[in-house]
Image (tube, rainbow, N blue to C red; front, side, top):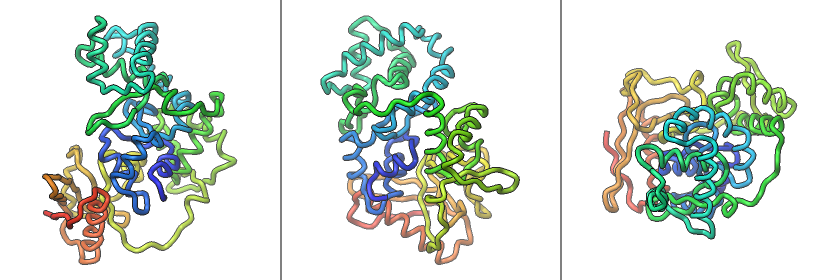
Length: 338
């Protein structure tokens, strides 16, 4: 891919609650994009960030955001129903507060969540506990607001109508088929179970989506499981041994819970724990974990690798670290520990 927005369009949506890791997810799938390039695409509105698909943030294309919200938001809103009501956010209140947020943000008046909270409190509206987060989330899921440009390291919010031109209107069955097709184009070969997890669909809806998109997809059976894919995106090719520093919540590790990268013997990650750390992949094997820290102009990448990796594998990891260095815009080679 040439541009970060091309990656978002191909994958349909990219999980992004840890936005710096989300930027790297996009950058590593392009030829030469840097953090600054991804940031520019985000600030310009070529990539948007909002709550959709599941109960978390995703990057999405402006051309796709409306129909994708239409296809998935009702289920997410329903899943949060009891939490919303416990914070005094019934359907009527959600709509009223959504209209207020639009009024606060319209005309390019991009505000951070903290600033939105201040505006609401000044109007006598409680934002205690998780209420502010839920208020903003409801407005996102209803297609009223989305991301604005970054302000330093702070996210801002904007009126969706001001960040994305009106897109095509799809009926419910059309949106479901399109969502299914786009998932398998960007993530296939994958199973119906992978689709249900990624898009928070019921199994019945996922099967209906496959029925609506099947004429545009190919299918194969692997270990008695049907895997769907787009033949144009899945042509086998020979590639040299490559390592990847997969970031937190990357699509490659989130999407396929039953077809994930096998762990190398002696892998340092303890099963059943979440180290809030990225994975080191060499070829098709998970060989360790990584994290990076930046202090001033100094980049340090800490790796914890399985024992017994040969020179070729270690060289591939070094090359992946160097790609991260270039992406982050560090002129000197990164310090590698571990």
